[in-house]
Length: 435
Image (cartoon, rainbow, N blue to C red; front, side, top):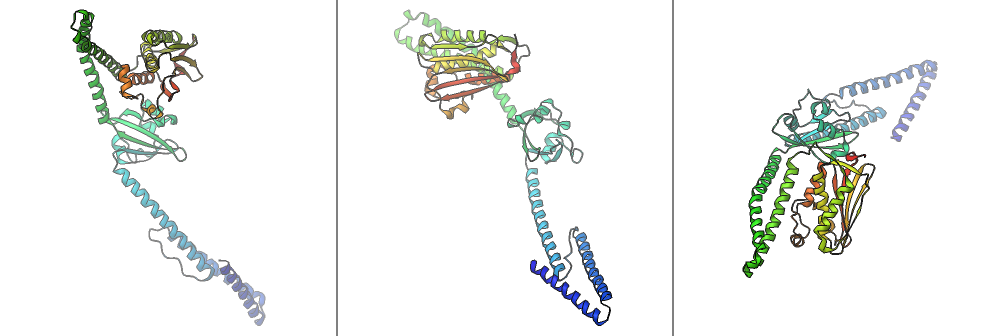
C-alpha cells in the first residue's frame, strides 16, 4: 500500500514537471499549471462520482461489479469491493444461522420468547402463540406483563432472584392447561423465557396424590382394627400358647409401623393438597420447643441422652401451631432415633435480621455428603437396615419440607461422617411477631 502511494506521488510530481516544461515552451507556465491542476482535480471528482454511484447501487440485491480503474483509484475500488464481499458473506452466514435457529425453534413444543431490556416482546416462536396467545404483529414490542397479567407471573418476572425456580401457572388461553415458566437473563438486560405445557404431568401428579390419600384413608380403618385385636391378644399373653407369643408380638410391631406410615402419608397428602390456613396463631417459640423437647425426652428416656434448649422467650412466630409442632418434632425425634445412647442433642432458636432459625444438632454418626440432596425425598433412606430397625417411615423430612414451604421457609441440612448433623429451619423474618 505504501509503494502505491509512493508511485502516485512520483506520478504527481512528474505531471507537474511536465506542465512546467510545456508552460515554459508556450511561454505561459502559470496558465498551463492552472489548466493542468483543474484537469487533475476534475479527474478525481469524476472518480469520486463513480465511487458514489457504485456505493449507491451496491445496496441492491444484486450489486454491480466495481468500476474499472488503475492506480490509487483501482486499489480503492478493489479494496472496498473486497470489504463489501466479506460483509455480505458474514451477513449471509448470520442470516443462515438465524434462519436455522428460527426453523428449529418453530419445531419445538416449548414456547421460546425473547424479551428486550424494556420488558417488551422481541421475538417468539409458533408454540408461544399457541400456548400464550401472542399474535404477530399486534403484540410486537408490547410489555409482556401487559399480556400476561397474572399477579404471580408479574412478581416472578420482576424478581430476577427467583428465576432459578420455575413458575407453574394456568394457561391464559386454555383454562384446563397448566404451564411452567422459566426465565433466563442474558445480554444487556434482555431475557429469554421458556414455557412448556405440563398439563399431563400435573394431572398425573394430582392422580398420584389422590391415589395415595384415598388408599391411606381406606387402609387406616382395617389397620386400626388389626392393631387393636393384636394388642388385646397380647394383654392376655399369659393364657396364650407360648409358640404364638413371638409371632403376635412381631405382627403387632409391624401393624404399628404400618399405622405410623399411613398416618404420615395422610399428613403429607393434606399438606400437598390443602392450601395453607389463613387463620394462623401467634406462637411463643420457646414454649413450643419446650413441649417438643419434653415429649422427645419421654419417648427416648431409655437411651439416657442429654437434651439442651436455647431460645429467647421474646421470639414469637405467626403460623400453624400443629404444623410447626409436627415439623420440629419430626427433626428432634429423628435426631434422638439415630443418636447413640448417652449422646447429646441441642435444640436452639435465634432471631436474625432477615429470618428466624431453629437448629437441631446432634453427635450421631453423621450422613455422607452424597445423601444430603435427597434426604427430603419421600421414602428415601440413607441406610435401609438402620431405618427399618428404628421404625422410620421415610416421610418425616418430606413433611418437614412441606410445612416449612407453607410458612415461606426452607430446610437446610449439614452433616459430616463421625461429626454429627445439623438440621436448620429457616423461617422468614416477616413471620416474626413483636410481643
